[in-house]
Figure 1: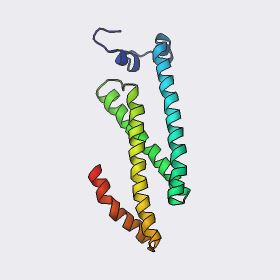
Figure 2 (figure 1 turned 90 degrees about the vertical axis):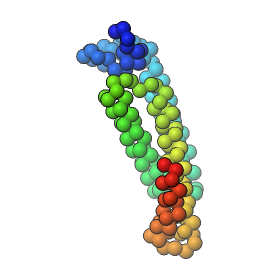
Figure 3 (figure 1 turned 120 degrees about the vertical axis):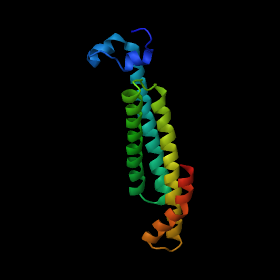
Length: 152
């Protein structure tokens, strides 16, 4: 390791042109850490989706909307991870610390699901109140839009 380089920079963003396999042979600790993080993320994804779909299904009595919510959450978190890599690894040249993606997933998924339930619940209330579907969607968005915009 070059003097002045951190452990994460040397392991995660090596400056040499060796293959990934050659680098992983050099540092089995980093490989094990990466596997442990991947295992944790798999458990988090499964539990979050497994808990969210039945919860939303019971709340809004639809199977399509919870599945749509999960797909959109996956896209949102993937875009956040991509931005994280671009900023830290490509722009700053530093590796992303191992706990940041796990923490980021928990925060993003929790907040976005909370907002999803908030919006769809207001739409459902308007629909139960006798509005047509299109008007109920508009009423739900009109009631929740300012609150969500102010929060974010």
